[in-house]
Length: 428
Image (cartoon, rainbow, N blue to C red; front, side, top):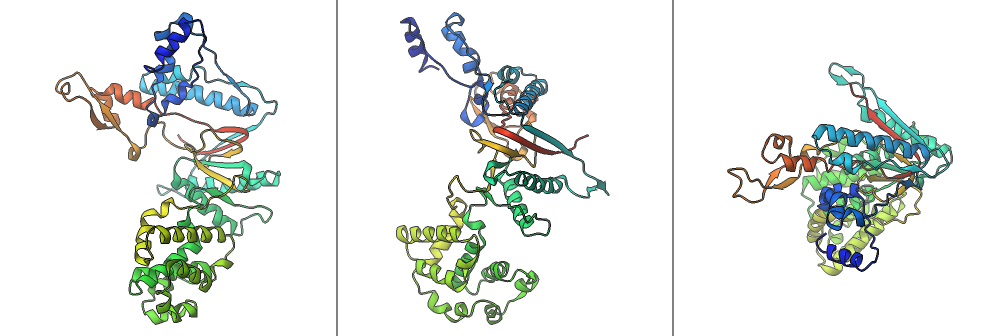
């Protein structure tokens, strides 16, 4: 504001119009360091109410009727609830103009369902998340049978761990008797695209680790597990992990691997990966080629920039594997799984939020540090100090900072043009 104010006032003094564009709700993002009052109050205070003409853009041109109406009710209610819980009116002020006008002619569809758990001996018979995953598969089937392509479907989650759980479920469902033969369950997500999640890459890494240190029991078990998972899916895993004798262990692997083990270790790193891909027939695995090619690119990049050293590569991989994934075009026909945060600014025709249950406040493990100050003794000479966010601050001299942080919770709905599905646990 300090930088722009002289420019704005000078322009207005010379008879010109100036346009200030912004969204008060966006300032609630804590990580942006946003200040709600900047657009909400200070523009009018510094420039003068008589020289400010507020234009509200309150029409939604992308979402269907029922979705707009649903969002209007959710955000209006959320603003009232947060204001009531915190005793601070700021959220209600920020969301005072949240209601949007409908522009699209089609109705759209919103379904909110509440899952009631049956409790036996103090524990749920079927946890609500498992029931929600089964409903997720049902929604996906229903949409596909209605002619909806997978790329028009988005699944939103709060945390990456939830996304991985959904990826694992859909993969298992795809290979189960419950899968609809007329439907597909392909997904694209940050987690599903990671190289260290691909079965072929993990087998390749298991072989590299075993070659690097054949006496390492963990490396031997990892290779045995990855090989069985890909080539012997019916093998009992307890048998895999109890094999300790090296010759017997290698007998289950391709003959060329055991026979050429010593010569393989002498190969350059990139050539070694190519040879192992051939020995373990990894190129024949359906859907794995993109992951293998991306992994070979990673090996080649390391080989070119670093050195031709297997041990150094394996150590580097452990530090960097989470950052490596395949790149796909936006035209891939697959369900997109995203976090709510990553969905901002995107638009989808069909959205499913399978785990629609989270606190309006920070989770304890995500509580941020707040920089606080006070004029009250004995803190008045300390300046700004960091404290952990938590409700204990509500009854302290730092209450103002606690309340401001709590009001920064920003309920966000991505742009959805047709359908919302929101399963949630039933509360008392």
